[in-house]
Amino acid sequence: MLEPQGTAFFVLLVLAFGGLVVLLAVTKQVILRVLAAFLAFIPAAVFGIAVVNKYYDYYQTWGALYSDLSGSGEQSVPQLAAPADSSGHSGGGRVSLGSAITASSNSAAHAHSGYLFRTQVSGPSSHITREVYVYLPPQYFQSAYRHYRFPAIELLHGSPGRPASWIDVLDVIPTYLELLSAGRATPAVLVMPDTDGGVHYALQCLNYPGGLQDMTYVGVEVPDWASRNLRVMSPGPAWGIAGYSEGGYCAANIGLQLSTRFGYVGGLSGYYVVSNGQVPAKWRPGGTPVAVANPFAKYPKLAARNAPDKYIQEIPIGAPVPAFWLSAGSAEASYVYYARVFQEYARMHLSEVPLTIINGGGHDASVWRAALGPMLAWMTPQLTHSARYVAELAAHHRAVPHSGGESHAKAPPAVTVSGHHAT
Image (cartoon, rainbow, N blue to C red; front, side, top):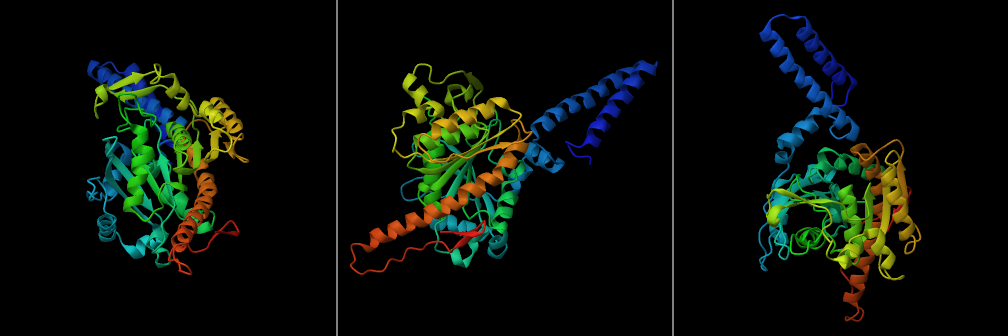
């Protein structure tokens, strides 16, 4: 097929380049020689780009390529306003956002396929404002779940990347719908924030001394916004966080440092020590990217705290640690090594730390797509279990002051997962 990674496309580029080179060799007209030489650069350059794209297995179709480069895919996703609540926080007011969702969605259709929208979320402490994508599963629109507060997963992209990469490149929605249909996953809301503020940056979700407070935005303010505005659980054991590449590092680092806010962590080809970054000059959004080799060079305590493979060794036995699921491509030895080392440290606190090795894959989108389904199948049933536990615990506490009182807390309908009930 003549797709970006298809053999026919590469053959066509080679033939085009070869034909122009032959024309350059045989023609005696200066104008044609100059024109052939100029045109030969085009298939040669495209071939180089196509090789890189095939290596990383990024764009599989022309539609995905056009959607990403033109931004048309983003424009097709409804943009919902985020009104301010009584505290002045952008995005507050559950009724207002709920009304916006109702007005812009078709409940009957979305009870079958779910609903994706994007909005701007501002952090009151970090003073960061960025775009956040949210996917509401089909059950969000079904009557059986109308009083249910869903668990949630925060999905963090890599660098360079955007929250839309989960949609355009990793195909998270069809993957998730297939799992739900097969009974291998349970319903959760997916929250996909912009973690870098631009494809030219690599912030690694860190709170930089004297600079951007990205961890606060990603790990605290975005989940808080979601719990205020959507029917989702408050941050805690019914929240998961997962990411690929840089996002995998972010998920591990945030999950460990904010362990009371996340119960489960998924690392898709993540790394476990802070790496080189790219930050905006003078910390101004849109500023020229500036390379940062070690953001904590002058802060050894922060350096140790933001190295998950070291920090997890310092956590006291018995202290809260989220459950971890890890993956890496077998062809990328360094990431397999990172995962295995972190797995051993995590086993000091957790009885089981699954590690999935994707055979034949490197550090590329094919590996992350292959790992995404198993990660969701592992995480969502446990989130459902945690959501039920939290709801029942809250109901018990509300009922205690009222002797014989009846709680009105709503637990989720029973959901069958892989042949057994997730409760």
